[in-house]
Length: 146
Length: 388
Image (cartoon, rainbow over all chains, first blue to last red; front, side):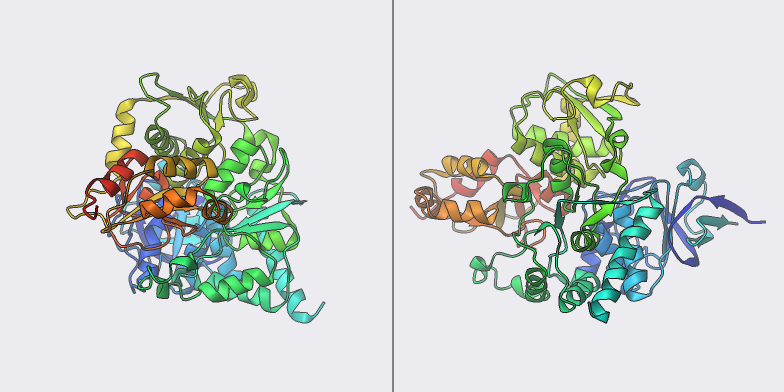
């Protein structure tokens, strides 16, 4: 019996994938610029101050409390989406326009969807262990956990 | 208007509106100024650069004063000839930005002529500039993203949401700076910035105990907070225009949280974000955000009569106007004799050879640099000078 956690869809798309979760706020720029610059096939977190440092988030559903970092994060996320080398969806407690702009622009200009769902309490999210397969529905703004 | 223009304009509008919708904006408002971060030229901006190129090809033009972040400094192409080829998109992006009417390349646009008035609405990116705009100038901008910023500049509008509304500018966390901290010390102030970002996250911090901070140092502190947190507005009680008093900063409400920053916190953030190297440094950079004229003069004053060890490059990072003015002034003599490089390059983005030492908390956060005070940077750069 799956459980539905309803939040807010910040960008469109419906995917299923394996969770990688962190309680630490996440800097998309600090994490992903290096793998992009070096043309890595895998997206290993390059932020050495983060507990996910060196962890591979490729094709995972990335869950964190909220995004941090500079205003490059929109197009950094957009680039990982277009290259299909980053996570396949993001779920967080509180998103922000910077982050979702990357996903929305990817859909508008490149026709590739990347769902982001926020407004789910982190106290609920943190019960989902890394490795769990979940469904992320950005169109309607919810996630489904087993 | 031809088909391409119309199609692209509606896509740019859709980007702004979709984004606004998800964050509860009911309508768009006119802006007076924009600043874009979409100017790197490195290969991680291919997708966004592709859109910029479409915009330029369609002959769209910005509607408001628009500046862009700095990029590489062509005056140093010989010195950095192994690095510059990495900026594969540089020429295309500069050409495109020029075509659409962007003028001025700096992370401190408020030090060129892109200076909105108090209360005016803007669409700025560059996290450090947004903090300055909201906090010091009292103009209003959310942290727009690269590409959204350009969309807003071309449409001339942004969503009426977030920090554009009075009620969303209310302070949320009261952060007291412990009197044990020497707040005249810039390294302390930028370390405080790193800690504020960690504490505040996406909330609005109100700082008590920095009554003597200069605007330059709010720039430096705010840049650090915007790196470790999603900070876009910092009220400094008794200093910034919306925080003449504590009551005003909290709009008459009580703080959601009370936190104190002490000396131990500053030691902790330095330990956490600074990298130690076993090798001698190759590059030392000061200024990120770019230094103001006053700050460059301070660096040159400290460099007077000294020479940079030839084994290092010492970069003094500032905007194009300050650079030109210094190069044409008598201070150029000190600069030349010191062997330091006055530059508009971005030390966070330019992959200068490591080990790198910097006085910037922000640059340190984004690079694996060693974080030192300006005096220490200069001491390290000059003390082992052998070529007398």
